[in-house]
Length: 230
Image 1: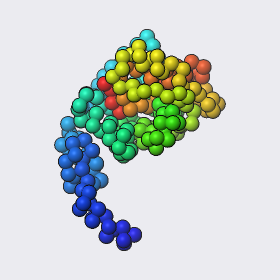
Image 2: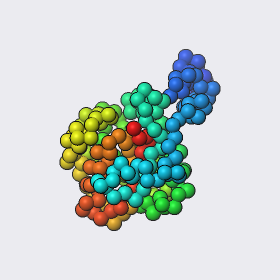
Image 3: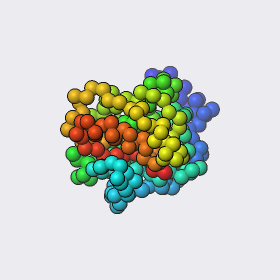
Image 4: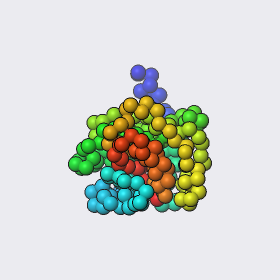
């Protein structure tokens, strides 16, 4: 333990902690996102001020109890940088930060009080091996903790690979997502109010496909929460 305390300042000297959004040096490495960038994050506040906004994206496609996204995603913006660091540079702590943040807010809203479990949009096992983690995992776990419900990642399964979904047209995305998800351990699902969590909502095609798998057979209610919305 003493040796680690001596080594850490040396590591920080050569590899000083930087903000995961703007790459400026941080006064404290535990911050991970600097104060200026936190203030500049494009927060939606949908769950407080406009709870129907995200639900309208799925109008005529899904019946959702609740739906929200923490941040707005803009190409080449601060949220894209954070998502890139989360998905491709191993910074899972970004998911934890956003999960703590959104989970704490949802826990104050009565509509989210009936959630029974939190389920992440899954990765295919091949991509999971390559990346080493599902970028939604920490986000979902922290929301589940805040709502005091189980986080369940062994029910909804992705059975085929797809390419990156960001900025694809809805028609192309639907073609990729069709019949790529399935359910196992069905006995854990029936009659539940599920909160399905994802990183970014674009056209909603992936959420829609997952939702149909989770609700069509098992008579579940569904809510949706994501880190960002494009």
